[in-house]
Length: 290
Length: 160
Image (cartoon, rainbow over all chains, first blue to last red; front, side):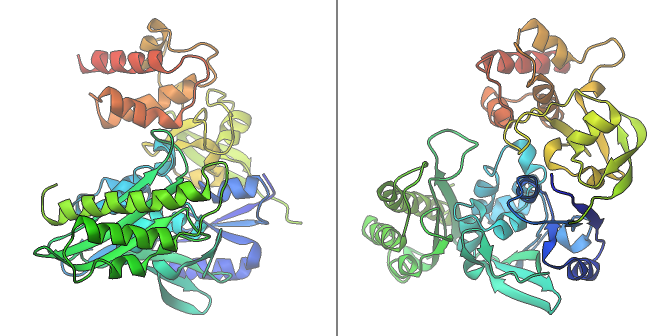
């Protein structure tokens, strides 16, 4: 491990000040499951960890009917997927957060950290994009909000400026007769990085799609919102044909690479397969069949 | 070049309040093994993949290689050394011995702590739940089946 100091912040303002004083070699420490490894392997020049887990705003889950869900950015995954309101209203978040790392990782890792790490293959991000999430950011120039769909800019890079960090993540209350779902493809049963993943949110009005958001991951430099997939669905009945049109839009939006986990062709194919699967699952939830 | 700081950390470890001098760069695993002398938790990968360093922190299963020692101020830590009560082995330890759920033993402290966390949460897990829960603990000797059987046996023993 490189020489690194540690400071515990107890308020957002104190963390902002610590990060400002620390400059560009100061890093936020939440669950540490990515950033401690980065520091140990010297992949980032870090000389100060600012621990944000003791700031009340950074930990906790609050759901208000009609308002939506707010997650403290450092809330550990196990609290997210065990929370009754998250389970009832945001199943895509449960599905994604339940398979990020193993049990010991889930005791520490957070959705805010998953977003800030900005991996193209992040499991949490397509679910959060599909649910229409917003990242609430604090920094030396005050507060700002960024849609999660616009947060990542390149592999490992995002909109955060030096000294900024994510305070919380918020998600609108899902409409009546809506559902969400998330799934990934990996060649084993657990503990792997996605070859491709996909998340959707779907609201129905009778048999017609009233609203939809489709997101895919591990198929481009950043997780992607696919507006063309939503356009293929909204205002139309949910049929095999419209679902296939959404899947085709996802395949078109995918811009994957070939690497040790899969080829570009396989990933493009999987984007279509997974979008179909999660649309069917979300539709079943919207209809109350599941 | 920054130098690290010498820090004093106080935490409850296996029920006993301990205060030790650490470096601000120490992980909890390094503090346990090198500062406190508790070598039960093992270093395998040192990056959160293998689970050999698993401990409980405030009742939650964590990889101690991915926790900074400085984060542990005021925390409650349980390591494999805290499982037995005197000479009385924990039912999980007895079951691992009886079911031959170890060969080289390097992964065993992590499996024991991880299994304890599982049974604290759910006294009667299904085989699938045991396998999913323990997926973050790697073993290159046993093929896992004997470990799963040992956890099932300990769970049964602890329920009776």
